[in-house]
Amino acid sequence: MKLSRLLPVGLFGVLVIFLAIGLTRDPSVIPTEMIDREMPDFELPELRDETAMVSQADLVGQVTLVNVFGSWCVACLQEHPTLMQLSQSETVRIVGINWRDDREDALAWLAKHGDPYQAIVFDAESELVIEIGVTGAPETFVLDASGRIRYKQIGPITPEVWTRTIVPVIEAIESEAVS
Image 1 (cartoon, rainbow, N blue to C red):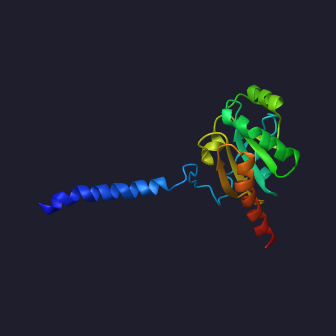
Image 2 (image 1 turned 180 degrees about the vertical axis):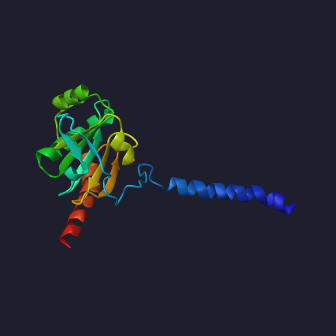
Image 3 (image 1 turned 90 degrees about the horizontal axis):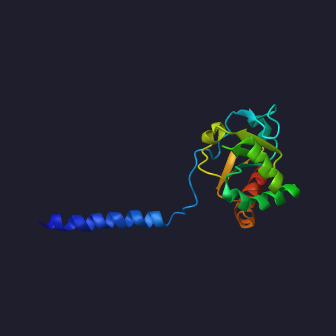
């Protein structure tokens, strides 16, 4: 008889523990398997020149932001001024992945809003984005000089996100290179 009275209390306690754990987690942080792994092998066409190819070898040599975007992406417009500013100040190399887009729509979007990218991978069939675990656009990966993924930003890069989150990651990568 006493055990049947304790069962609801025990179940309630377990529920409270799960809720407490869930409520303390940052909902914007989605774990990714790709952190500290090399960018997967790929070779896809460049958006602006369909005869040119872009591969993971093009992402080595310096710290690089790899930004997933599309002309259909409303949130990509929110981060675009920040990317343009970073590009104009030559703060960091930015490579784009144009995802599930029409080539002409993407080129028109870039002509209208500006083009901050040194190269743009045209991934119309989601070949690369599936391999790197993209869940939506915009997403940005910070790669070290060896092409290893060190950080994944889900959502737009705003000036605040740039300053508070991505700059410290880049500084940590650069300090490792000096050591």
